[in-house]
Length: 147
Image (tube, rainbow, N blue to C red; front, side, top):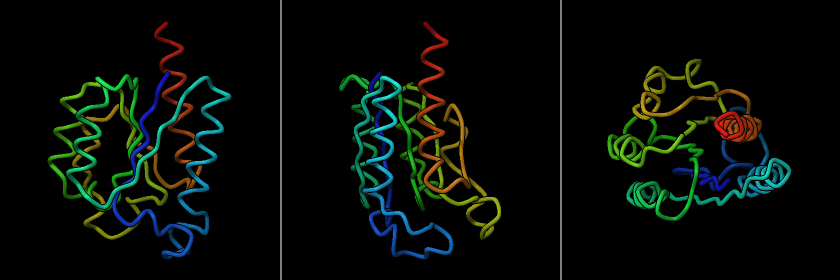
């Protein structure tokens, strides 16, 4: 099973950016741990980070033709603004899990609305780096049940 792991704007700053909200773990550390868990679950995880909305849209749009079976996406601020990401996820028709390190429902009101959640298989938020691991386990479990 191939999983596309996408990280949106400013997530390259994890570890130093508002650690009281996002923790002190870097994105590289989160990706490394997610890739390692993927190996134990029989999943190949390929990760990208971009601050550019169009790059994320292109990666989603080509996910199926590149052999991916599912998507994990932390769209960061684009979660609350991007119709383009929503449409790409809907169009590619792969199982997708929206994730967040923090519990967006307990933060600023503008973070309460997700444009992408309605077209995702599920949403995991508020568990820090474990949100990534939980999403991977959920996709792997879903795939195993469908066999």
